[in-house]
Amino acid sequence: MTMTEPAISVRGIEKSYQGLHVLRGVDFDVARGSVFALLGSNGAGKTTLVRILSTLLRADAGTATVDGHDVSTDPLRVREAISLTGQFAAVDEVLTGRENLVLVAKLRHLPDPGGIADALLARFRLAEAGSRRAGTYSGGMRRRLDIAMSLVGDPTVIYLDEPTTGLDPESRIEVWDVIKELARGGTTVLLTTQYLDEAEQLADRIAILHQGRIIANGTLAELKQLLPAAKVEYVEKQPTLEEIFLTLVGPSTGSGPSTGSGTQHSKEKAA
Ligand SMILES: Nc1ncnc2c1ncn2[C@@H]1O[C@H](COP(=O)(O)OP(=O)(O)OP(=O)(O)O)[C@@H](O)[C@H]1O
Ligand SMILES: [Mg+2]
Image (tube, rainbow, N blue to C red; front, side, top):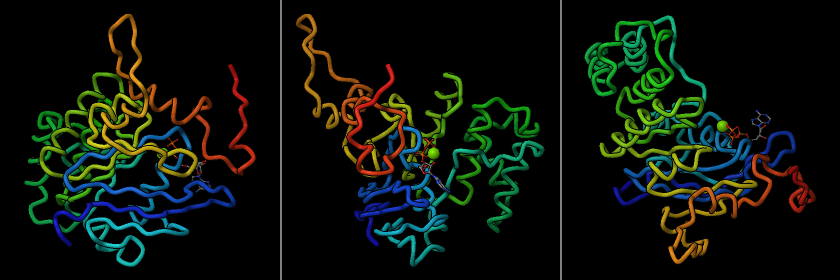
């Protein structure tokens, strides 16, 4: 393994659930120390892909390596390298913030769980709240604690599956700041999101997962070149990521992967 090798490499990954062909050959690389945003509508297969890359789910076809280790032949090494903050938080509401962190450090058999907990509480601006039950935290504090818990043991790669879904605007910005700080510290971040502004704010590269494949992958500037800039009253207006997404994904957003090739060409769309 070399430092120039991608942190995550995905080739031809396919996955079906009972005949529903969710992933149909997914390919992408994530450079070390970068933030990579995987964009997709509800049901596009983002969580499915994250679960495959976390070794929680086996792909039907294709290969994926994380930190140089193959997810299917070397799952233990992959698990040592990663941490996953799921779409549904792992925080125990009965425990205090500090107790949650100490518990994770103990589960990972790390020396000095208390010291690790205190350092993470300080880093995520939770030192004062650390002795309060997590059940009393705001959504943003809880999500920060959840991300802090996933950083116990210093993983080199972190997956954040919809880290700000359900948060109010202020809490979203708090979580964004935490993710930016992670990236500055050299952690590789794979982020899934349905929010285009989130990808725009955080990601070095953005990939759009649609109907089982990556249909676009590039920097924001590269994606903007996919659409011509509109000339509005002599002022050039750059397309927003939302306009690019909607143009690439087509008019019927919100739909999952098609169940068969027939529905793919359906132009039905409620007004
Ligand atoms: N265990 C399962 N059994 C059957 N179908 C599943 C299973 N898990 C996911 N699916 C289906 O696979 C598709 C992709 O689901 P997935 O959760 O990966 O999407 P997603 O992009 O994460 O969506 P969301 O944005 O809503 O989180 C959906 O149609 C979902 O209903
Ligand atoms: Mg999901």
